[in-house]
Amino acid sequence: MKLSVVASLAALLLIVSAANAQIEDSTNFGRKNTYAAFFDYSNDSSHIVLGRAEGRRFTELGFQYERRLKFGKHMVWKYTAELRPLIVESDLTVLETIAQTSPFPAQTFVFNPTASPSCEPSSTNFSYTDPNTGVLDAGTTTISCGRRWTYVEGLSPLGTRINLLPHRRWQPTSSVLTGFLLSAKKIPVDTGGSFNFMFQVGAGVEYFRTSTESIRLEYQLQHFSNAYTAQTNYGVDNGLFKLTYTFGK
Image 1 (cartoon, rainbow, N blue to C red):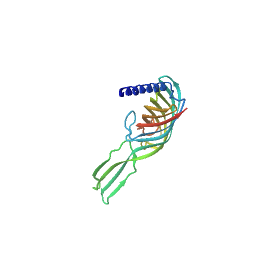
Image 2: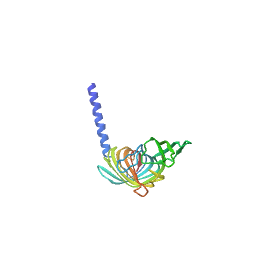
Image 3: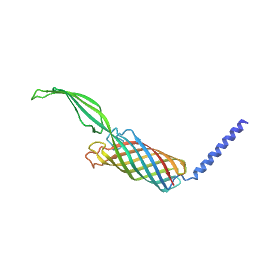
Image 4: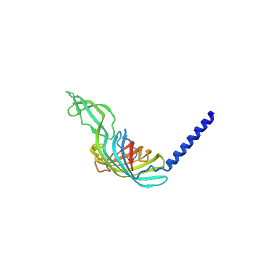
């Protein structure tokens, strides 16, 4: 009796699974127009592609618009654009302090912190006797690291996205975006620029809760730099984790 019950339950599960597969195969989960809100974050930067400025943090809130260009059995191709009204970028800063113990009286000099491509804390003693006056200059130079946060806005008007398996709820997805950033201060260093070019490329997975609503999780490689429109062009490479909620019709 128990074997027949187990067999009946197994047969029922197979029937339900087959029915769900048929329903998914007949459902188009891609939309003509898609609207989205997203959040992404990166805790660090390093030399991944072109960037040379290390230790940069990057987080943003933004909005996305996509329009379907082509719908096929195995793939959806879309135009993508993003508006980023709220971005916060964090740069490493170097603070230099000189504690002079000779000549008397002892003095301490603290210089304004400057944004730097990298920073290594250090403490160095110095001692020097002026051959002309015989006066001894001695003390300690201390380098300490800090951070400064800068408000940034961004726009990416040119982009594209591809989704695979458009008849399935779980869809692999990849995207490319290009645009620019405008910042309240020069980034990522003091000799950089307030205007920077930006591109993103990445991939992830999109889960459709309904045929018009989905949640997307991606890993994006982002690079921004000023293309030598400023005094220096260090550039920043970030790996971003991006979470997006989409809806459309």
